[in-house]
Image (cartoon, rainbow over all chains, first blue to last red):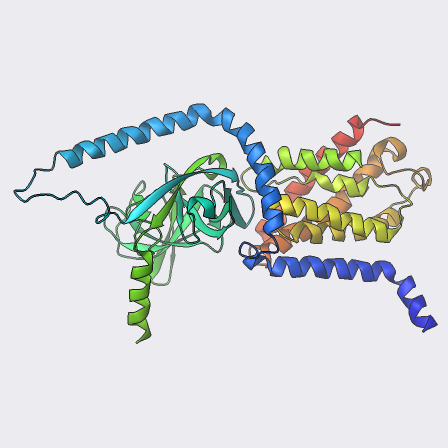
Length: 275
Length: 160
C-alpha cells in the first residue's frame, strides 16, 4: 500500500499529464457530434453571446461593402420581377395561390462566428430554433453557397462551412449540366475541388459552377464559383479547381434556405431505394 | 492573472483573425504558460495549461484540440527549462523572460515550447499524416510568427 502511494506521488506529474491528455482526446473524438450534443450547449451559448458582441463591432467596418452587394442583388431581383411580369397571360382564370408553387423559403441571418483556417470550419449564425431554423437547411450568401446547418439551439445555429473537409456538395457546370462532387481539400480558403467530371467534357476557364439541386438542400442553379482552368487527371475522371464566389473571410450577411418539400422528397427516395 | 486575461483577449480579438493564406495562424496565448514562475509545481502547471486550452477551445469551437496541445506544451516546459538552464536563469522566484535571462536564452526556450505546442495542435487538428509536408510547413511558419510576437510582448511587458 505504502509503495503504491509512493509510486503515485513519485509519478503524479506523469499521471496527471496522461489523464489530462486523455480527457482532451476524448473531447476531440466526440466532437463530431459536438454540435448536436446538449452538454456543449452552455459552451455554445457563451460563445454565441460573446461572438455576437464582437461581430456587432466588426459589422460597422463592412457596411459600405455590404450595401454595395445588396444594391447589386436588388437590381438583379428587380430584373427578374420584370421578366416574370412580362410573361404573356393565358386565357385561363388565374387563382392566386401563394403557397402552391413555392418550394423554398428564405430567412436572413448574420454570421457571428466564422473561421477559415482550420480543417473543419464551422459558422455560427444569430438565428435559431426560435426563428424556425432546422438542421439540414442550406446557407448561402448573396455571392454563393456557404454551408449547411448542422446544429440548432434556441437562439443560435451552427452551420458546417463549405470550407470543411467533411462537406460534400453536388455541383454542376452551368454551361453543359455535367455534374460532379464539390469538396474542399483543406488548403486555400478561396478554392474548392470539383471531382468526378468525365474526361470528354469540354471545360474552359471561367465556366460557372452551380448547385445541381440533387441534394434537396439547395435549389438548383445557385452560384458556387468559377473554374480556374487548373485540372488534375486521374483514372476516368478529371478534378477541376473552382474559385469560390463567396469570400469566406468577409462573410457577414447570409440566407438560410429551407426546402418545404424536403421530407416528402426524401421519404419517397428512401421508399424506392429500400425495395 | 492579469497576463492571462490580456493574452486571452488578444488571442480572441486579434490573433484568431490573422491568417496569411491559411499557412500562418499565430497562437500567442501559449505565452501564459511560458512566463509562469520557474518554481511552479508541475501538476499546477499542467492544470493551468489544461484550463487555458479549454478557454481557447470554447471560443474557437474546437473542443479539446487546444487543451491537448497546451497540456503537451506545459508538460514539455520543465524539460526544456532543465535542458536549457543557465546560471543567471536558475533563480526559482523569477519567471522566464528575456529581461532576466537574456534574449538568446529566451528565444531558444520560447521557440522550443511553441514548436511542441504548434506541432501537436496542427497534427491533432488534421488528425492524420496525409499532407504531412503541408502541415509541417504550417507548423514551422506559425511557430516563427508566434515566437516573434511573444518576444515582442515580453520586451514591452511592464515589470515590477
